[in-house]
Length: 198
Image 1: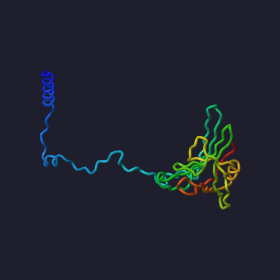
Image 2: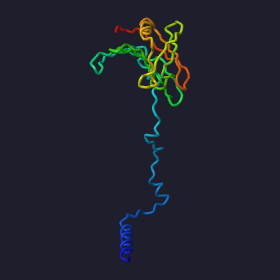
Image 3: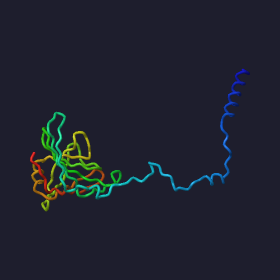
Image 4: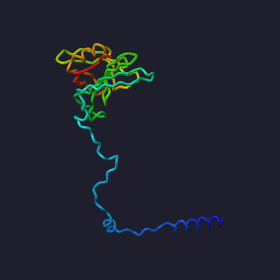
């Protein structure tokens, strides 16, 4: 028992003697060594740079065309245009959201869909409807379906061929649609000049 106590005392003494002793600092020492360079900001506290509304709608009114192939090597054609307005949503989608209208042709058929960069459409799994106005015409109700994968920021319009015919001749398209917990908003597109023959 005495050996055990002696061994514990010896280890404690060795441990204490090997620690470096730092000289006590006086308040004047810490003042002399402090450099005032303003508040230190870490990555977490830096303000997040928000894109400007002009940056969000860059390319609005210009149709973008794309040709790719699917996993079975069949061609996929797309024509997309960005909304000319920014949707201002409350938290958690604050910071501006833009819509993208896309026409897509695959071997399984043609679809017209609307996607927002932030936010969720107010829809059910059975779908919903939106009011769409072309140029100075009256708004017309169009039904839409949600995405099969459950994404809430994208909807697929049901009357795609009718929409494509109107898009080819119109200059402006305004979609009035509800968003989950954000109310009803208008998504505006400058659609003149669409070339679509697929």
